[in-house]
Length: 131
Image 1 (cartoon, one colour):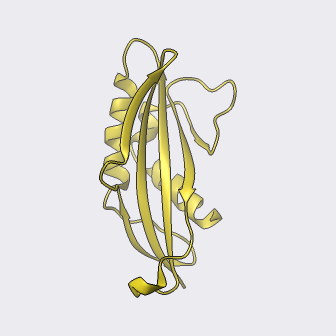
Image 2 (cartoon, helix red, strand yellow):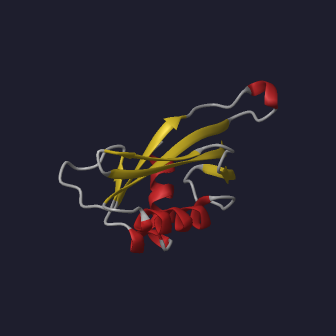
């Protein structure tokens, strides 16, 4: 899983997304995180269904949560657009794996506002074959 997160952070850092956020955190933000920021976490992962014929395939679901505090969510909307450009239907260099796909599943994007904090959640399904 370290290889997956290394690849995700490398792709993030090489994209235009950091221009819209103060930081990207792994799994949980710092208690003093400055808005707008993002959190990356693994939602599900492991070996794919062998009945699919994709033996030795990793099938991960990762999630970005984008947070903004203020009257609107303009900053995280820009970050969201940049995330889609950087990750949806693109490739990742995952050490020890042959990359297969990175796609945003239908219905995997949500937005909410709780106690004055805007949040956009977006997920990506990543498939790779261990080498």
